[in-house]
Amino acid sequence: MNAPSHRRKPRPAPDGRPLNTASRGPLLRRIARKLEVRAIGLVPEYFNPAEGLRAAVAVGAPLVLVLASGLYGLGWSIFAAFWTCLCVGPGSGRSQRRLLGAFVVLGSVIAFAGSWLAFWGPTAALVAGPLLVFLSILLPARVANANLLATLLAVVAVVAVGFPLPMHQALIEALSFLLGAGWAYALIHGLWRIDPHAPLDLAVRAVVARLADMAADLVGTGEGPHRDAQWHRAHGEHRRAVRLALERLGALLPLHADETPERLAPFLRAQEAAETVFSALIALDHAFILQSGPAHERLAVARTFHGGLEAWRRMPRSFRTETGVIDRWLRLVERRRERLRGALVSGCLRALGQALATLKQSGPAAMPQAPRPVSSRAAFRQALRQATGVLLVYIAARAFHLGYPYWGSMAVVVVLQKGTRITWMRAMERICGSLLGGMGAAALLHVAYPVPLLAGLCVVLAALAIALRSVNYTSFVVFLTVLFVTVTALLHPGEGIATARIADNTLGSLVALLSVLAVWPERRPRLRATLKTALQANRAYLDAVENRAPFAQVHAARRAAGLASIELEMALHDLGSTVQRLRHRAPEDLADLTALRLVAGQAAAAWHERLADLPR
Image 1 (cartoon, rainbow, N blue to C red):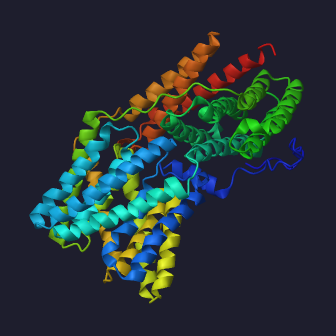
Image 2 (cartoon, rainbow, N blue to C red):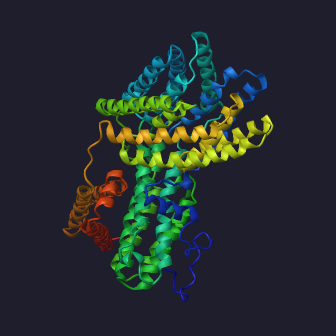
């Protein structure tokens, strides 16, 4: 609902700039919140043009060399360079160098083995493909943060099997891979280094942007009724968006656990500050829903939160260097607190001040625990699923005479994840992305363009694919499909390449979904059990606040309630949960969801009322 027309004009920020508090966030973030209801990730803040430009150089150099020299046998260097750029995952510089070096060496070995073993005949290829995929997934399992490495090694394996060659030619193919991957490695870790903390900075800004959107929505509500006062399909969408953004940030921080505490401290404190602000916004949101306290006080506090968060979002990465901006906001928060009568809104502003003060702190922070390697059981299950899926694609390729079966087996490898939910959504997104990209590639290749123009387009496509890979999987697949189809048409001209890409990716995605459901399926708690657990955790948080428990106990209860709520949000989009809801939409589930968000709001409100009573 729009704010009333008689609403006062918002005051400018302490730095003199006006605050556009009527905005509820850019269009892309509004779309992202809608998509997250359907478990489709869209994080526009994760767009990384620096990585895209570097990938363009990495792919462009071997592409120009191959086309100019006519040595199409070295075409593998183009794909190797792209895969090496894709292998750069989040983590410290040390772990990135170790994992990327392993990909360069092991990928060259696998490229030779797959191509040479497949040369011995169709039956040998039928055995070699699943076997190499099984080993690619299983062998790096004891290395922390090696999931991306294992997946890309399996991709190299299935593509190599798709190009059966005698020993001397297989060696040339492996050498081509080594040259392309080695060149990309030298570019990434020598000639064009990008700060490994960039993903952390993007993740922090994504959290702050979603917190700002939540505050802006409260400002937009004004003195009218809150739309979450009654249940609706997008109920609590802001809370869901922030929780998922915090989960993404929390998953990245342990990957940097081998760094010095001083280097990671700004991001750890930003996480702490964001969680403090989120708890306060939940309390303020609860006050808007119940319309408790004077409306003008609620609105003034919401505007202050929005302005403070927008100022935070504009700060550089090392947030405490902007002490002047933070100090001005701290003084503004304190002045507005002095004019408030309500305990709840006063406690919310105090929490905002505490969060901003946290950003100013110096010195090391408590480091997160380093990620543990996956268990042997989990690694074996994933390897078995991947190998089974690849085998099924090979069988289907023979039965239906598919022209590029390695595209289908590649789809199995990248779509089939450890969880059913993410596999399900990846399958749907890959099918949609392949369809859109294949249609675009077919239209592009329908017109005869000069080779230099197509080569330049491939460089642009490589840049866009890498820059968008963390933003949204569908958009990544669209550009990836056009890139691979165009490069294939340049190196190995033929008819129906785009159509084959669509068909093979659809087959592989469906086989991946079948494998995760049928091969050693995971036993996850039912949705109702997860809902009950989250409700109990939030009630425990409320009890801890109402019983005046020590601060450490309240914070632990709040953390447990937040984790349980995140687990529930993830479970709500699980394939099994969706099937359950389609078969039987239980009214008690809806009642429990409503009760959960009410209890979470009550707990946050009670805590911030208690916070307001503390001596200054």
